[in-house]
Length: 372
Image (cartoon, rainbow, N blue to C red; front, side, top):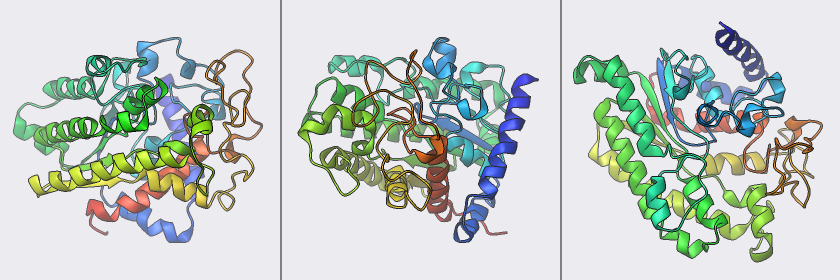
């Protein structure tokens, strides 16, 4: 009962937020997305999308205590001060917020969130064989797919029944893969070394997508990587050995994200040729965040703190690897709505809100939903 109340409460607050947010030009795209009439959403990925899976694996994780969730005075395992992108996507689709799979007590009638904070595209054993470590979970993409199969084995009677039940579902295949690169780069590998990892990461994402297609998926979004050179943790770690672009982001690291996204988009085009009856859309997270930066002042963000974390400690970007948000004595800014970065790694609710709206506006026409 308590969890249902919280979901209704969040929905009420976010609907108010959405109604006051989008300008008139963006409404037709939001309406077009609603016209898809999705009855379920299945989300895979990492902390950009996790709505509470990791806290079931690690009950004392920082995302389970304030100031995470401070907007609603209730931490939920989301890595933000409030809601995240998938929350807004679900609400614009007219669906409730997705329950985390590992919660088990959640209601899965309208979909499931399999994403786990810290998750990688490649299995942790594969990364370890490449001397890449640092993950807080072993629930990589292959594990999340296994959860999906286990769920469907009890939800569907036959393969045909599954395809029928999933025909109006939206599958969000990430973002995933970012942590593979994070662990490698923060572990001391060079950008050129990590580029060698990209084809393998992309291949794993494509194979995962093929699996959900076999299970019955017909509408799929595959998000790309964020411009990591704009993230405070990257700026803190690598500002001494990189050049800056016009948004004061690390140029070489953003170029790496572009490299990954280019490889991913090429693989998506090939996958679309293999599956002409399936709608597969690239989710441009990179472009969405660049759009937020380019219009930051207009959107209400503080132009003097665009790269500074709201919750953090010290340095040029209010981020420290040893005193992170959620640690005792680590303060948060007075108004998270004025910041893009929440904790130096993840976005504030306000940034997630604009990111989701931009993402929906871009992908709605490509999902080929019928206008009402």
